[in-house]
Length: 560
Ligand code: SF4
Image (tube, rainbow, N blue to C red; front, top):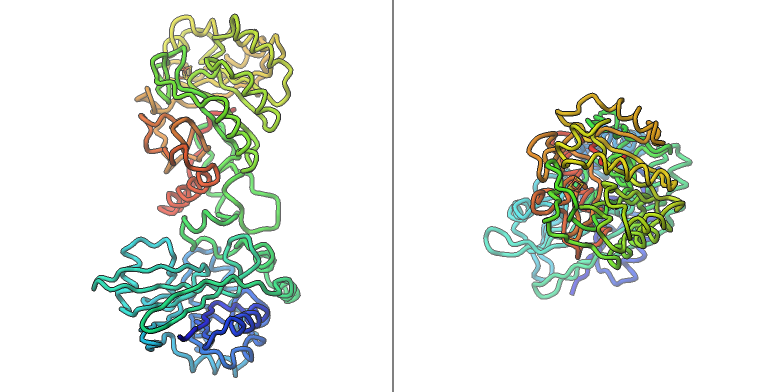
């Protein structure tokens, strides 16, 4: 058997390269291979050169570029921000690479093919298509097949993308190729760890087996070296935290959704605040060039929970098609409590409880009381059921910190409101609102703007101020075409900021699209999916939609 240790993407990180050599030898590797990209990000390109003695090397795009005196690295980035960081790294590496090292680079092949123990082995840098091709694991089947077809070898090993993975891919000729992306040793794999990755390939009697190896090394020394050289802080931070802060836009949605950061802050000014009352997203006040999607206004840390779908009303514009006849799809107190605990663990700070009409749930007060121990809670209600037992339940909520009631009123009089929501509903909602205010419960009001009440927002604010609801607690949102409503703003996940929503049917992109029968396009997964995975799916879909034309979605908030 022959064992080959393969690394790539040294990125001027002699500390990791030394660790690779020691670790691979300790694991019994017969041969040591580097698939290229000796430079980038790090501050000590020349320290890498002597360590390559005894290592079989390919030229990556960096070696091709430096060896031939080109002015950029040819990494294959397409985004301006990615390219700006790549250029800083390249210029530094170019300036600090000796003529002898550059001459060595010129001697290297960009690919290598040989038979090892009966295994046809093909070594490349980016892929079998190009030296700077990014061979991501998330490529579709055709993308993988095209690359293995271009080789036909039993095993293809590559690097360049920075993320390790292995996969057996069926070629068009019916054969199978084991693809091994060995990862890189120059910086972590955007997984929150400080370790880096390389691969061991075991070849024996015509068969091959790959093993990805997590490699700890003196990352503190590498970070200190980067800082001492005056290179971007983001390069050092990535080494220390394990999360990529540069060269992000090239990363496909699936891979990027698994990291901590998804967007350059410089991409944010193109944002359209949208037709609702959402504010343009605040850019985090830190020195990082990038920001996470979750927790920003582009993906608020606000979880919507539908306790049920049946309702005492049957509003003709209800976006989730609720009515007294709607299938209740009740969540139940146990699932609700478990979701609250999960929401806290996942970093949510606000909980919006809605339906249907939540006050139809007999355990609602207990559920709200439990949730307010951990989160700021807003309960959306039509405020029409505060009688008998439910009034006593409402009284239990009086004075509870972190709880707000949000009620819909579609104007300063019954006209427009009752036309959409039913005769007498405005009077009863006002009475419920007055009761809640008299109990000291914080109240917010949302007005859905329809053709019948357009422009009456200020009159509603004036009226509500007389009832103890200040103007900044009253907001106007547009009618949307979902559920029962054919008219209004058309919102889809490709143009609307996500607000993660959970129902008995699972996870949804937005509370306005939480009714699975009428909004299947906004369904993210069933109730068996974890909240963490639902969040990741939101991020992946957001990035997929945004990548289509580079634009940002609009905010349509159901919350004040
Ligand atoms: S809009 Fe609200 S009050 Fe009207 S049917 Fe839908 S859930 Fe019920």
